[in-house]
Length: 340
Image (cartoon, helix red, strand yellow):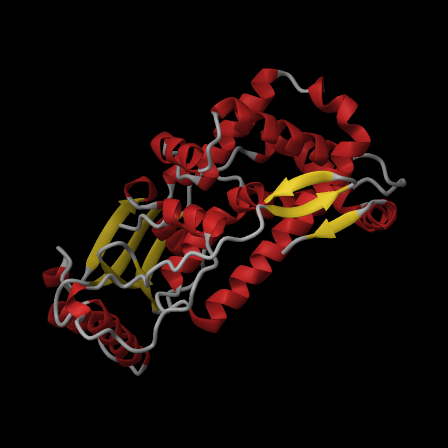
C-alpha cells in the first residue's frame, strides 16, 4: 500500500526536502503528487566526535523508517512535517553522538558479544522495524549501501552502548513485584511479535489518477476527512467516494495481518491508539483515510521468560539520573562538532 521507505532514504541522504506546493501546476493530471526533488547537496558529515565522523548516511539510516511514515502522514509536507523531521534528525543525531562517545571509551569490549547474539539482534530489527519482511530489509541495505555484515557491526556497537548504559551507576533498592509487572506491561508492547498483529479498519481510498489528478484528489480527501470529523457516516462516504476494492462494503477490511500491509501503513495503524479518523495518508498511487475498528496486537514472551531482563530494565531506569550525570561529564570532555 505504501512504498515511500526507499524514497525516504534517498531524500534524506541526497536532498533537502522541499515543501509540498500549495497550488497545482497547469496540468495536474500529468503530475505526481510528490514535487520535483530539486536536489540540494548537503554536507556528507553530520557530526564529529573527538575527530571521529558521523556521516549523514549513518544518520539517515536511523531516520529513514520514521521519515517514511512522516512522508505518508503529511502529503503536503509543509511546516509541521519539516518541524517534526528536524526534531527527529536532531534527536537521533544526539543519540549517535552519545553512542560515539561511549564507543570511544569502551571500544576494547566491542568483540565481547558472540555472533549469534548479534544475529538475534538483527532478526529483532527485521521483525520489529520491517514487519518481519526480509526482502524489505534487503532493499533497505541496498538503498544505504550496506552489507549485512556491516549492519551487524552497527548492531554490535549498539549492544555495547546498551551494556554500558545498564552498568552500575550507584546502588538502588531491588524492584518490587508490582514495579516488575508494570515494566513488563510496557516492555510487552514494544517487544511483541509485530508479525502477528491483526487489524480491522475502514478505509476510503482515492486514486491519484482519477477525478482531476493528484492535487484534486488530495483536496477531495481533505474534504472527506472534514465531513467525517463533522459527523459524516464512514460507510456512506466510502461507498460514494472510495476507489478501493472494498468500497461496496463501506471500506471495511476485517482481520488483516500486518504482514500484508506496507511498513508505513502498519506503523500508522498499529503503533497508534484510539479509533479517530486518520489521514489522508499518501502512498505511491493514492490517498488513504482510515478508521481503526480493532487492533489485536501480537504476543510477547511471557513474564516468566523475561523476568530477569525486566528486572534489569527497572534497575537501569532507577539509575538513569546517575547515568545522565555521568553522560553529561563525558559530553563535556568530548570535542563535538555538529554539521547540521
